[in-house]
Image 1 (cartoon, rainbow, N blue to C red):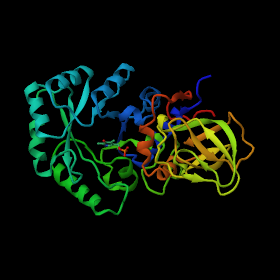
Image 2 (image 1 turned 90 degrees about the horizontal axis):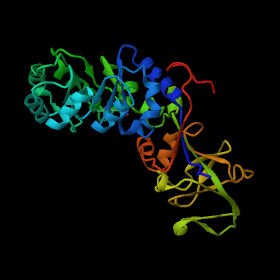
Image 3 (image 1 turned 180 degrees about the vertical axis):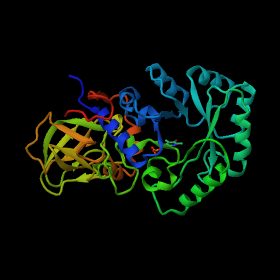
Image 4 (image 1 turned 120 degrees about the horizontal axis):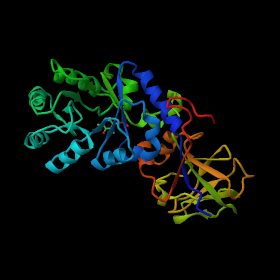
Length: 369
Ligand SMILES: *Cc1c(COP(=O)(O)O)cnc(C)c1O
């Protein structure tokens, strides 16, 4: 039998989370960010739940191509734009909207002689200092982009560095600079990511860019998705391969990191760093067995983890173990691994099987469970 290590994807949860985004920003249109294979949830499984998004956004041409191959006709934005003639030709072919974040991208467009789409997005650097043209250059760049043949609309975007901390002074500064950069320019504005959407109401302009929250995960420390009305779209499960007794004083796993203080019942579950479960996971990291929160003990191996089954001694080989998702918030699990939930969902490997529930009714309706 195939190994039972499964990422269960719930498209109805994604449709629900999209509606939550609309409740947070009722006057904004929603750009659904589906880069990195829909944050590791698999784009093919997620797109049917996103048909009510106003547009999609990805990081690479390959990701955009996957969307078009699936027959999806929503507008698609390349968040980092393109740099050369060849990529501009592909963008034109696929009908992709482009971010323009640098003078060299504008120059490439001017040489290409026409815009791949009617709508372009000029990215301004308001303080993140990763991508974007300087605030002072925005008006001139905007004028030059408007002059590229085929362009009918140039929208304005920027990106927050600290939106998960609402009181961080950089937020107000970025918003002020964004106002300054866009003042008097035609075009719609887009600043907020997931954290900005929730924490910074004044940053919900004509558009919001929502990534993480669509998958039911919270970007805010100490406030897991369910507390924000979000539903986890991914539940990662494994199964118990063995249930063993370990005597007091014996150690468990590589490096003998964990030593049993008393006689223990230890479960061995079919997940490891070869599946994307981080090796950095600390002793005591939560896993769910038979509805009980148990603690991981000992180092994560490539194919297996070991679990202290004290809270549920009656479980048996073959029983399901939940690593994160419904019943166990990924935000807490990420903390135990010293990382953020974004990384956990993106690092699941090809060995894990994906299974999707049916999306019941039209997007936005809840599935019958
Ligand atoms: C990934 C990304 C987003 C989405 O961020 P979330 O925190 O997942 O909502 C928004 N904007 C840009 C430019 C991005 O690269």
